Image (cartoon, rainbow, N blue to C red; front, top):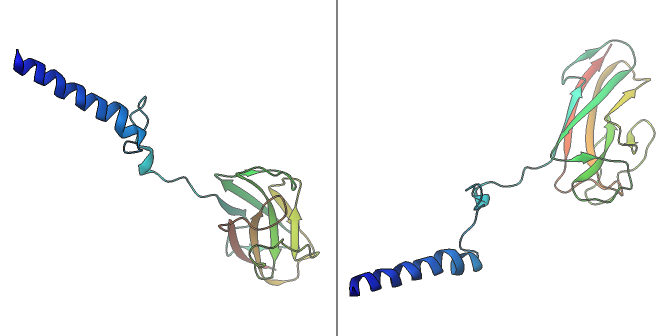
Length: 157
């Protein structure tokens, strides 16, 4: 009888520590319903990919459609101030802007796609090599931190 009483006391102490005390101090993580451990996976980082034109493409004529795909981010109109959102900017044959400041609006070089567009046709391109950089900016046109950016190079014939 004494052994049974001691076993019950030990079982009770284990129950209190595992179910009540350890979770209260953050010593246990995970989802009790699914059994998943949330501490093992980090949140995915947003990314943008220029899907068109392909890097290294040779384009006939003086225009090219630039298309984007994003992951872990929602593209919304400029001025929408919500976490996890942004809008596209295209930089043509120029360097990235300074971090932490709004992307300038320079016709033909820094193009703002403030209506949540996911594609844009560049026109009047000269023959030769061109570089296009896609940058996702926040509601004030400031590049996201960390940067969400992609670059392609192509040739116009």
